[in-house]
Image (cartoon, protein in one colour):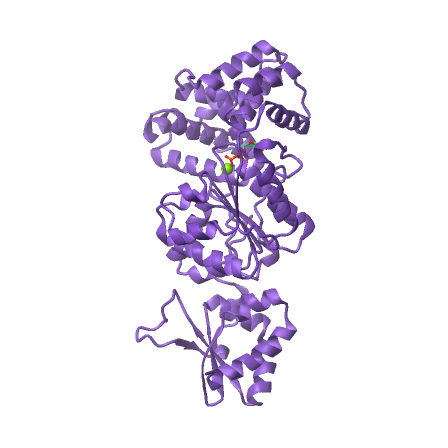
Length: 483
Ligand code: ADP
Ligand code: MG
């Protein structure tokens, strides 16, 4: 049986529901729990401080009106804020804030705002744009993290991907409305999962610009979750994700062995699924073969559709390469494309890598793209037996690529280009040599190990956030591999 205060609150909710969008209602009012009514003061339990502030800032008039309607002119409202699933006081009593006593200024400076672009680190590079911005407040600004070129147009269809591609397209055109929820795409490495996942997000945005789409890797998700624990704002983390209309989580297998993150993902998954939101996940395994993932989560993954991407056949591989060079506005003899797709047949990413390397080799050495040059590059790609990479080779490659003299890289110069070239040299040295951080530092401008560590982090962040920079890293990677 409903308590009196529950009755009062559901009366309020009826009015509120009529006055705001269903989305806002679900986000901001559905999670509220009425806890008591005493002396005509209705106490509402809200999930976080931020939540309370948001209500006060945006819905106070509506709340006042409805309270008045239900409780009369002297009816009042009080909030109780739950923190970290525990109450705020040690006695287990709800910590009650009387709304008027809270400092209004705090509302203007919300505690967890992480403006994406201002988040520059010391080296001048951007760090990962944390999509974990304030719920609602930045709703329109939630950066979907989609890569434009990973669209359906550029995703060549073949027998290898027919089901996954058409299911993805259907989901993109009708998110949450098909039976493919979740849509799970799985395949081996480099066969197009990430591309297809982005394409779905882009498709949604093109049909429904108002929908909030978010692409995250399972790794980013995990890191945000860990940060939220550290900053005691897990509730905000969950609320942020609950506001997403189309959630794309790439490489979900990375959650293996992380039960806490799986728990929170399970919770978010259920909430989204229940409210008809679309979930897209990718994995390197079909659900039946995933290990280290909780059974209850696996069973959710099986609710929708699991579709795999297989290795494209020869013609499809050629078509992929053709599309790629056309997009890049370059030309390449047909026999070279054929050579690439016949020699490299396990991984589309490697095939593209070979293509880029051939282009790079030809433009750097001012040589035409011939079968011979292509064969030479491909051989190194396929055999995976590059000569040993040394720090010197890496430094030379970086200098050649950016056209800067070696002395600059070795110098103390703090010029942005030089710093970045130096950081790249450090990053690749760490990646490809067995040298210690200290040894790498001393060979790259006489820096200490901490600087090298910082460089590696900075490069990783930039690769995730800056497309142009990612291209540098991919080019360099290929050049170093085939030096
Ligand atoms: P995965 O996430 O499965 O490791 P990616 O999505 O990163 O693979 O794909 C690797 C590369 O191959 C990307 O550059 C992608 O654009 C390209 N690629 C894969 N499949 C296709 C396809 N069917 N059409 C066009 N490009 C593709
Ligand atoms: Mg991927």
